[in-house]
Length: 427
Image (tube, rainbow, N blue to C red; front, side, top):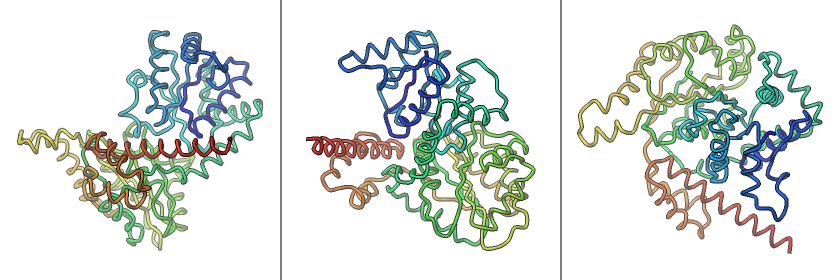
């Protein structure tokens, strides 16, 4: 039997339904809360029994799953009844570089499957998951065809359309905290679209300043004008060597042959600006390959492309916050090594540069009380302002703690008000 652990958000519920129906069509028993727990039953016991009897437990690991105490308890039960995470199949619903710090320890040693909300080929991901459950081996070039067969056999074409429809609606799902402005950094990135040159914007700062949030905001909320295409370049692990870097870039751009990358980039730039938002780099800043990627390999692909449109790259560098604390406390220069190494990496890229102009954004710093008040004045209803400010104050001082608190509070308030409307209408 296959147990599906997920949070009941719209996106995750839709994917859980997709998986449930595909497993059932393949003659596999499936346990899911909405179909296995009947009215009046003790659901906690039913969940534990389902996990105990499961052959595999599929976890849809989204940010809402990580925030859910019930979902975390399901993982605890899986370890308890199966002795380890060997029966666990985590499916990441956000890139690993975005959720890595929050990923449960038992998952960190597993071979993770990433299935993002904007997945272009859900059939291939479905085939990969089915292969893991059944113990089959499929080559990468077989996944799409196998997935198409699974979708057809289960009659899931309509659900695939729903998944893709959800992608089209994704901009409406941006977290409220996107509006909590980091003006010095955000304004600079916005202005780069009209700079008239190829640029590399470097976002720097200590851990805790929520670099992932800033990268998400660039990816999903950068102004539409002038015309641009934004492509996240995801590194499950940092590439090593030219071929590895270019293969990762080709995958992100949807180019089957890395040898055609140059033509592909020039073709895109003939139509509109192209913004590449790269995964955050944390530590190990003395990286000759990363320097070469920005100083020569990527510029060589752009070549002599000229015209009204330009390549824009965004790269985040995050160093350990302890370096800042040690410096402030006067504990010597050693604590600053990580930060210094990050700055030296930028200098090396700049020194070897051929095409990309390096732009250092102001370092990310904690969201201030004034920025929070400005956000509340502009975006939060008056009755929610003081409760929100109080919850953010209790959450902590780092930007990550504060921005997550904003989203938790406003999502909870929005859900409560929506449920109240539904209850009123039903009466």
